[in-house]
Length: 326
Image (tube, rainbow, N blue to C red; front, side, top):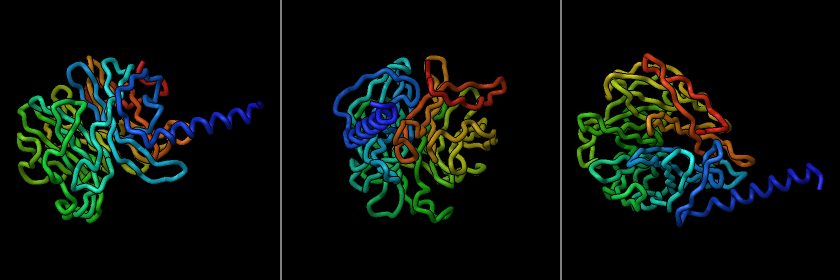
């Protein structure tokens, strides 16, 4: 068999395996060693949120299921992966689907999980059945692996709550959650507009007004983390998306823009980052369209690279690598 025919056969086999896997939900633990970036190569994963808990990293990601050559978002469920060393990973059974929220149509978009008082709260983006547009829901579990269940029976944020700033139907997406040193929880979210609100101690109700945050060239995907006395608000900017960031001495700002953290990720119009510290090192978790031959903006893949800081607290620009975490 000549080289051209062999390459074509390999292309078709890889395409078939990836397409066939898209409709399959994880039913049992599957352990694998990440061989560079992307870390998951047997299915498409997008919009990572990450949590460190009890000596493990948990990555919660949407499952991109759009079959090639179609080009549209198709996500029905979230996946969860965990690791104790950032190299050997276990995919656990699917812990949550968009339709687990009875008031939602579907669309399992970006999300984040956080632990408080022994419970795990999952803030997710879904499409509302009755109120036009995207909404943010909350699920809860006694375990980081689930199963998770709707914590409210209704959406926490709906599109009609933010019409003063924009009339689009997709500005209420990409929730990120942060619990400050005094115990106050804050929810940030948004597309084209960035918002935040305080949460009550029960983690499922707002505790005050929705506040607008003015950020240069903000598109979506806010993420809050803290190092020392500095708060960092990173976010996707423009389109195709870079990741930029701002810094503040307060969780509520004012925020000082610091520039680009990560350039456009390969072969994907969007990006969504999570930033964590684990066992003394910092990591930048994101997605690209890096799985050949069918990866792209609607078939994305989670990647991990290291993150470093300058002496003044600013972050060094991310070097995206194919090797990933070594």
